[in-house]
Amino acid sequence: MRVSILTGTAMVAGLLASAMAVAATKQSPRLERGAYLATIMDCTGCHTTGALVGQPDPQRYLAGSTIGFQIPELGIVYPPNLTSDRATGLGDWSERDIVNAVRTGVRPDGRVLVPVMPYHSYSRLTDADVGALASYLKSLPPVRHQVPANTGASEKPTTPYLTVAMPE
Image (cartoon, rainbow, N blue to C red):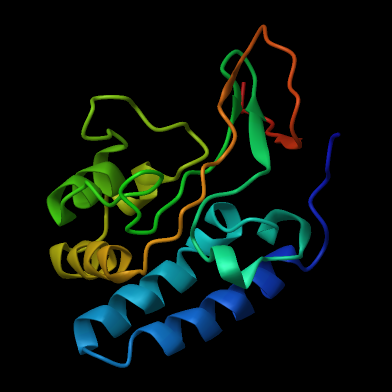
């Protein structure tokens, strides 16, 4: 099944992100800043199941998406789980690992993140901001949610996806 992006999706996802972020960060200014950054960077828009079609699942806040992005010559990739779950999320990543991935687009295992992740723009975050974002992501309660496996360019997709137009 192929899905298209609905008008207002970003607004719905942003409202959900704001509500979830406020509820989760009553502890410290650093976590509040991280939640704010996750909201304005629209992490929820890609990394929360249903957000891309205007129906974000609050039980899977930042726990990865079941809708992928079809990227020409790469295949279909699914936004991963950003919660602290050790099996399906960032639970084994350090804050430094998160900072490096956000800024450079390289995971701790050396794999490069897909171009849909705007790490080139995020590389300009201040040390304080990227640190706050990493702390916030590490503070998220673990949500066990395995996103679908990425599909290679020559493989037939079996799960929903959006087509991403890449600049020529």
